[in-house]
Every structure is written in structure tokens, then in C-alpha cells.
Length: 161
Image (tube, rainbow, N blue to C red; front, side, top):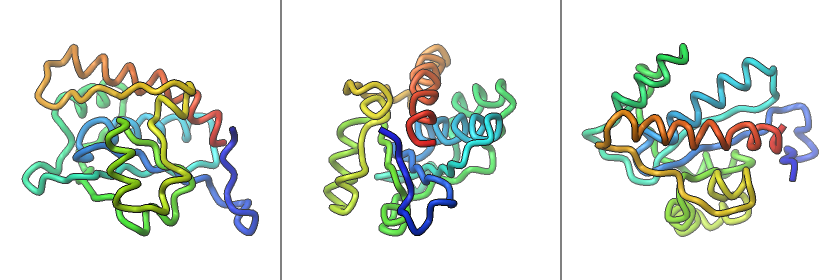
């Protein structure tokens, strides 16, 4: 399935929102890796990352996630967590959540998101699978999570281009 913008906006980029719990780990890694792919391949896609439950005392990227991205030449130190808003839902063509629970939360809070919200794994592979939450885990766990995300992104980018 290819995501196509509304016909009156065919020249605009396809807009994808990556969503997780606090917008400090999985969604940040997804956005950062996707942006790197977009730049590398010249894709007409825009991405953002958002949260369904921001902890106001924890708005910077998780240290292990930031360190792994920096090893790939991606600096996310300026990122600050942001909540998913009605405007994000309205203007996004696709909302990719880290888990099925995130999908439920998004659709429960924004019924208009129902037709464009899936887990990243479902969208990429057609099979449901949650992306693990690495918060508070060791570096090897973060490496596995980054591997999950990096494994899904090529299929995601191919389908939304």
C-alpha cells in the first residue's frame, strides 16, 4: 500500500508521525533514522516524532539512544519531547506507533486517527509486533531496539514514498 497525499496536495511530502510513550526513545530513534534515509535517498517524505504520555521531567533523548544514533553520525541532543496533538493527527498522512497500546491510546484520544494509525511493524510487514521499550535498560537492549526500528524502516519508506 502506497501512502499518497490528498490530490490537491500531490507535490507535498507524505507526512509520517512516529509515536511512542514519552518521545525520548523509540520515536526519536525512528524519526532520526527515517530523516537520514530521506536525505540519503532524496525521498519526498516528512517525519516527526511525538508522545502519548510525556513525563515533563524527562524530555531529552534517552542517553543510550542518543549515543547509538551519534555512532551513526546523527545528533539528537537538541530534541525535546512533544505530545501528539490534534494538529499532528490532522496533518499526518500516517501515524506509526511503537506498540498496539499506543495505537489504542492515539485512536482513543483522536478518533480521526483511526484510519491512519498502525504499529510500525504492522505497516512494514503486515504482522503485529511491538517495538520493545528500552527505557532504563542496558546498551545491548537499546541496540536490539534500534535494530528493530532499522529493520522496519526500509519497508516503511518504500510504502510511503
